[in-house]
Image 1 (cartoon, helix red, strand yellow):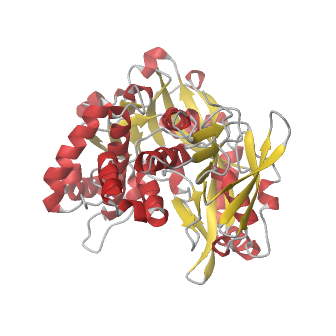
Image 2: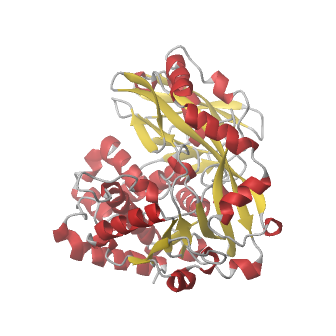
Image 3: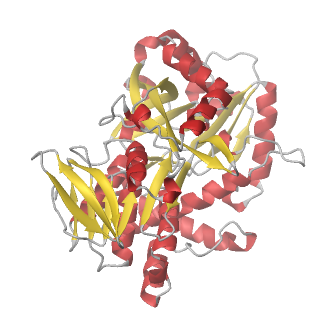
Length: 499
């Protein structure tokens, strides 16, 4: 491993080694082989924050089972599925890119990061059952979801996911299922992409290196980098910088002083999971099962009971449970991160978030102070026979929600992932939280289009991108694209070993 390789004055510097930086580095090097790329990671190992295996649910988010993507009824009285179609389309880019990475040898073994796991939506109570049936009718009509199954039959649900039905009596229940779901270890994927990048000519990565300063000098970014191993600080320069540092992005963006970063704030939310690794229980459940959002909870807190496969070991995960924190990073964060991020240009936004999101604040307080018994009560809504003795509570990392002014208003909390790019296209910064990892290739494709678009216009660049993401310039949502989608999906699944 090239853990401390330094490239002086590279074309590109990537800050952070999570799935976003890793994807951008690999994609840019495959697109433009002559590029010189340097990546810096502050922790001693790669992908230890948001992309770390236990810091996310590992769901290949494709809009299949996540009811938060279809929260409302449309004007026709049926559930609005437009967001689910959009997410599914974006996830296709990730599938295709990951398949390319396996076929081209960037990744040696697909099972090291992705495994087939069916995706289910599960509801209880007549109101939720009616909602799920409407959602199913709408989704089943689109070619993306033509394989979706729906049932209210207890025996069928027991076949799909035995833990869900035990102990339930007359409560109406329903479920949908799509077999072509996936469990993804984004940390393992990111590490392999970065390690491949580090083996390429003119590229390197360095762990234990924290970017502490970012200043624009003429048409070049000057970065101050602290080496934790030697205690020394040095400078490097690059024409393009990508801040994919999770909670570490906002402080660096503020240091950069770009106009696009004015008024931005961050609202950190910690997370926790209940985890079971008892073999006789784990063996009964092979699915990712998503339920309805508990009211005031953010979309990232929608409850789900999941199969997780990390480093070849299978376990069950339930959550997430939120907790209050002022740290922006799990391993390298400090309690002062939030107060030190407050500036005159974002103070009003932060105050307004607190005043106008009382239910969210109340939810975080309730989550942070609840007992193990209360947490088990939430789990037992999914798995009625769950026993506290079989489950343990672990941390699920930290997500910093972006707060910014929008349409003249302030204090908007964005529960999602977005990329801010400067007008001169010399810096891009990742903001927000999940489920960006699942659609990382689509997000990074937008960065490439915006900041390296000239390369895509060349014949060689176009061919290389088509090799990585064959549908990058095609709208697969259209009915006439159904045959192409089916073919590309089969090819990607075959490369990834998902039957």
